[in-house]
Length: 110
Image (cartoon, rainbow, N blue to C red; front, top):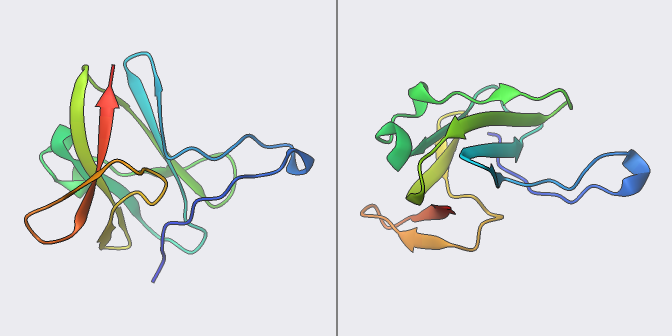
């Protein structure tokens, strides 16, 4: 089963630093390094916790998945769904306990 891995790439590889949720204006870019995944999705407040509504796509760089969402300013909870397995964003220290006893990642959009 695939898991979400966060890494920091070196300049020797001629790539930028990995970022799982980066805001650029009203757009939030969610990225995930999942080399063995078949399907990567995002579920959260912004899609009524329906992962099928927000499929991530393989980015130009192999093994990275990405999706861009236009979000209004506010507070959002989210989780990655990797090959059907739900998990919080391990690179985001902002979390809260959900009703199922697991962690949701929390994102503040300005």
